[in-house]
Image (cartoon, rainbow, N blue to C red):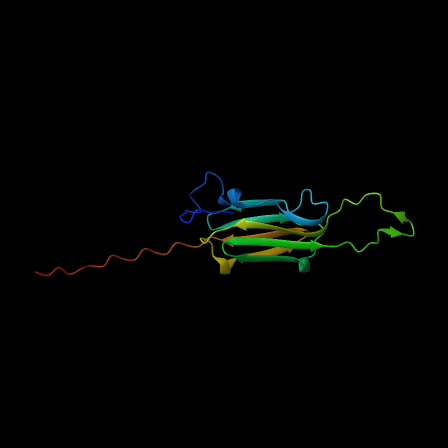
Length: 145
C-alpha cells in the first residue's frame, strides 16, 4: 500500500483514517466468508477496535505493530476426522485455517500504550493517540546596541 510521505494522518479524511487503510481479511483454509469483522470507534484519546473471532482461542491469536501497521492474526483447527464411524461430511462451513488483517495506524499513536483483551470470541484492542507535546515557551532574545 502506498501512503504519501507527508500525510496528516488524523485530519486528511472525511471518515476515520482507518477506513482508507484497512484491507480485507487474508485467509488460508476452508470458508473465509465474514471473517474478522471489525468495528473501529474513535474517541478523544484513542481508537477502539472490536474484532469478531468466533471459534478462536486466545493462545492462537497474535497482534503486532510494526512500520505503522497493526496486524492481527489468528488460527483455528477443528480436531475431527473427515470420515468417522457414523458417516462422512457432505459439507463443512466452519472456518478452519489461518487469517490475518492489517490496519494502518501511522506514527501518531502511542505504540507502548496499546492494549488488547479477548473475551467470548471478541478481541478488543485499544490504540491510544499520541498526546501533542506542550508548546515551548517563548524565549526572550536580548537586543544589544
